[in-house]
Image 1 (cartoon, rainbow, N blue to C red):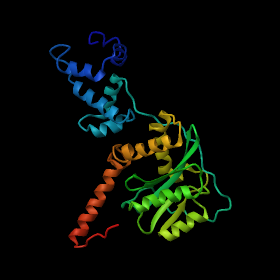
Image 2 (cartoon, helix red, strand yellow):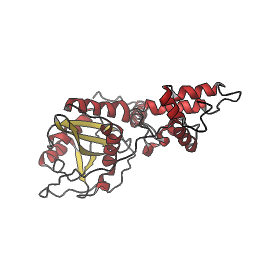
Image 3 (cartoon, helix red, strand yellow):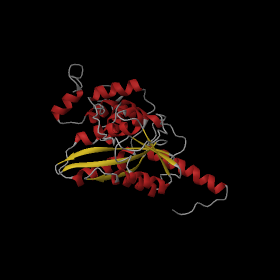
Image 4 (cartoon, helix red, strand yellow):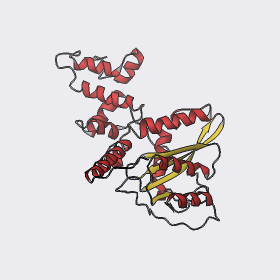
Length: 294
């Protein structure tokens, strides 16, 4: 392989010979190709390991955030040499079904998706998952400060109870502050009387974007694009339960806890949320206040 590297790609040779690319480069790094070996072998192996650990999802920027001693140019070059690439976005389809008779509701976000404090500004949306048993609908609640998915719910029907269940899940876990803003599109599930009654009883202020404008709920739309590209489009699901479990595993086992997010400085959403609560509890203790048990 070392002799043919100038003419053939290492990825193709490794595939034909049934050997590991990272193993080949590690061999080079130990001097396998001569006295000098390959000075980038260890970094090349680290790049491939990060990519594999992400479920073959991460692109160069995310991998570089995990390997800060490497430049973005170097990561991209090593990925090309390895023959690997991240998952790229696909086009999305509009799924909102507005209710023309819904009461007027303000837009309290106005495309300002920044938030200094977690649990106070939230967004949500609904997506469709195809399975061998028919459609499964998934609703999310996302915290704008940390970009953490704090609420999830699933149903065979797309009624108002679907997003309410996701919000109730987030509130039950302590991720919806009193007076919090929850922003969504103008889908009938979000403009329903049931949603308004839940929000009033839960001290949540409802906010909606304009009809047909994905940019007014860009964070929720962006999450679904990532979710579909990094998990859903890579698999097929025989049952609704299989799709539900895979979605939860992706969100809780990868997106929230292991995937660096560019909008929060390549921290993980759960890591940033945990850091906030640690600072909050430390501040409470310094003031002599003991937080009440939830």
